[in-house]
Amino acid sequence: MRNQTKLHLEQLQETLQRLNLWQAIPPAPEAFLSQSPFYLDTMEPQEWLQWVFIPRMHALLDSHSPLPNQIAISPYIEEALKEFDDLDLLLKPLVALEELLQNQ
Image (cartoon, rainbow, N blue to C red; front, side, top):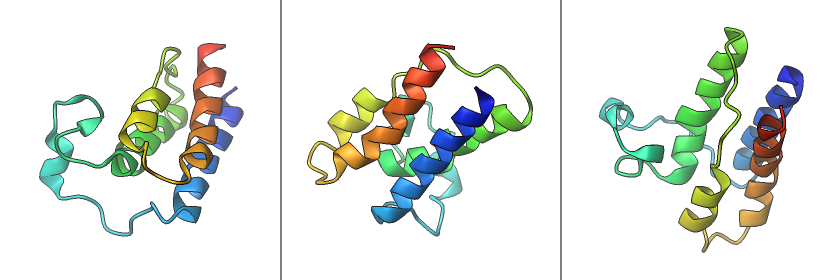
C-alpha cells in the first residue's frame, strides 16, 4: 500500500513535469503560511501539488505515519484547472491515489 502510494506520487510528479507545470523555483516563503485550504490565496493549484501536497505525503511515508484515508483533491483540481487542455492527464494519477487511500 505504501509502495503504491509512493508510485502514484511519482506518477503525479512526472505528469506535472511532462505538462510543464513543474517549477524550478518555489513560491515565496510567505506563500507557505496560508491558512486557506489548498493555499488558495497564495498558490496556484499546480504549485500546491508540487510544493505542499507531494512533499507532505512523502514525509508521511518516510516517517511511517498513518496516511490519510479521506482525501478529495481531484474535485478542487478539476474545478480550478477546468480550462487546462490536459486536465484529464493531470487527474489520472491523482484520482488513482485517492482511490487507493480511500480503500485502505
